[in-house]
Image 1 (tube, rainbow, N blue to C red):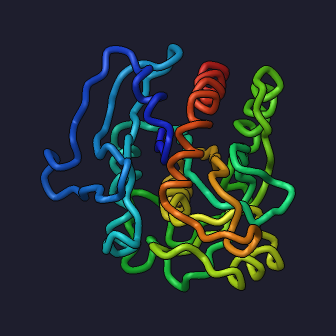
Image 2: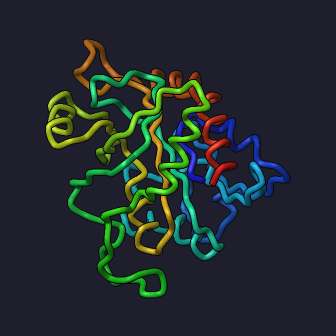
Length: 247
């Protein structure tokens, strides 16, 4: 699991947890984003062995794309085969509303670089790799069935990656919509690319924490994002637990 903003409650449900702060791991990255706990948690959740990142790393923290491969490659070396990634994101699709959950069916990255640039790590995967079905269809179908049992608005859409840390401009949000984006955010894609390279199956979710810039006539704020994410977090956590149980 990679947990985004507002999902600390799911980490608290992990049984018999063993916690390792990122700062205690030699040569590892350190999370500086607000509300990110910054630790690995190992344990059991819904009968499944779990390796959980409570807090993640972003390009806007000053890390290079190449440094951002580290967490998922550690997961691969630890034997992880399936990865659930979550984030808080702004809605581009005007039919969405804050508190919705969007299952990611694809993403768009137009930042011009990739965490897989540079010499290829052949031990993890091939130089060139397919991205046609990077979001696993069987896991997505399980997630759909679980959604029927929960009172959440499950959308399905395309995540558009911006590097941040500034929020997107109204024009950037309109451009993302024209290009097929449904939500915008500053994370997730580097992790998904790394997972795809080394053969880990991925299921991704965005918690819609705000409407994208320019949709409503008001400025965006970190406080709003965190408030909505924390309000919707408990129901989202219960839903994710059911998904994990059903995989």
